[in-house]
Image (tube, rainbow, N blue to C red):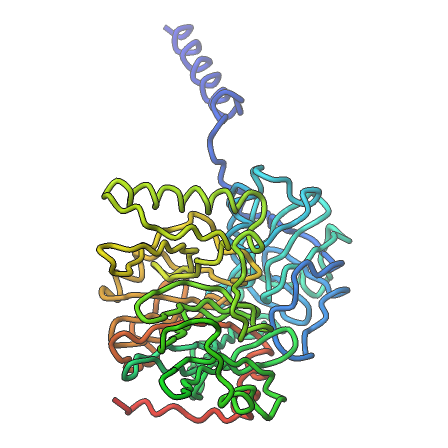
Length: 488
């Protein structure tokens, strides 16, 4: 009996020891949770290159090259800012798909195409710090402070002052900059037989809203500074035409004032020519041309806003993008021919395209004009490509569309800040501003603004950090006034 008991005990010990052994065939293909005691970015890094083009107006871009970034369990530091109790979340994604969402192309020597890469998201309960691609053991690519920075590791250890931070303490001696975000929001407003345009400035500091500012027309940032975009209806006898004008705010005399009485027909026999803005970016504007019933899309460079010819799709898209565009167009034409419609435009100039909004993102859209019983009509079709970065530099929605609809069931559109601290949500009649905490909308909106039916957002240009104050001052200095929230 004793021998049997000893044998059973030995078998039980062997079984327990065997259960602690890591067998390769049992872990293959499974996600292994990271050790909570290990920081995935542990160490000290130095910024060696700015991989992003300037996305802000003015000459106040902060120079990051030479600044350090440090990460440990208890704290994270970027430049002069320190955050306590950071959270590190790792995800593995396809490199090409991920960079497309950032509207960025990087050298394949840094990030090979269509490979699985490791992205670490760093955040605290109040702030989103950034996302970091691990290139190798000694290089990181940081998406932080609305910049794309290349970092080189200089030490496996952080500075002693940072290492002393206790992750269980609520605060540390240095404090990180509170989340600060602002947005220049361009609105298209139906008015009589045309449209008016307006810019709103909406900003928040650590969840507290700044006074909302407003100005007519579109006030927007470019690499050379801030600009105004205006649409003015001018006439010469029976001819009525919308004229677009874009100018640097430092230019006191608008181009419209000098040529308003010099309209030419541009070989167009019709008497009414409307130009309706659908989208405004730093360097391109997407419009709809309406010439006596014929509606065509067009993308114009800001520097040549009054040109008659638009930008060709082939000049914007790279890496086979034109093929995708033409295939989408051919499929749309075939759908029309299946209905017996043969008289379609050929779009040899590749200019009949623009941008449209859907579920919180900008999408490329093509248009086919055709005749149906001698009546001009058109068909819009989707182009399954993310708009190129030269058109749209930032279009990230950090909340799921379902999350937004759960909170605001009649939501039509939404925008979220790069800091992931505020959200702009529009319905048919309201514009809501929400704070975001822990990837969730606040329980109540910070404010709400009445919208006219048909009013739509055509521009959302975000500022973060020190840019918020700079942009707010620049907007106010160029005539912006405090928005009256009590207005109908």
